[in-house]
Image (cartoon, rainbow, N blue to C red; front, side, top):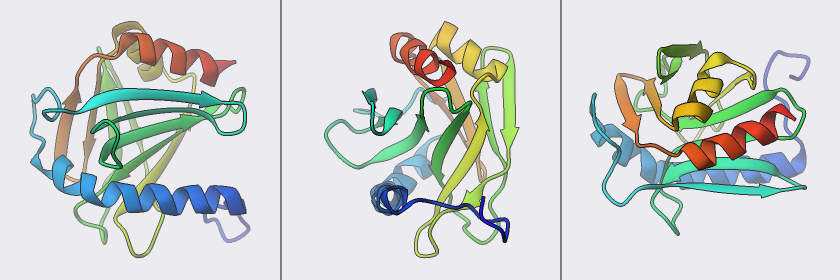
Length: 166
């Protein structure tokens, strides 16, 4: 956080943030089509990448594209997970709600870019919703009136959780 209470980013994070914001624009239309009880969008899949420099990224979207529904990032031992989502009503973003099993996590969001409808939530890596996500591989998210149930990704979720909690 910077002194005025906003999110502070390094130059590298700012470049990554802008890239994420641009890539999530197209996803907002896909996410808007998601409906309660859905099993994700056709053709969408989970992807996990980890590097020493950038940490771990777990995303759900169209393979080999920038079309994403959600992206979770963390650095080893940072104790937090950053969750990137898009919103239909940029003027009045609602809280982000993640669910897995019987666990729920509600978090406020901050707008990332003025030109895009990209939002960021920062949550504790040891929250029970991530423990459940690692155990079940299922994740639901609700944001700005849209609820999406993403299909299972247990192996990826376990690896992501392991990196984030180290």
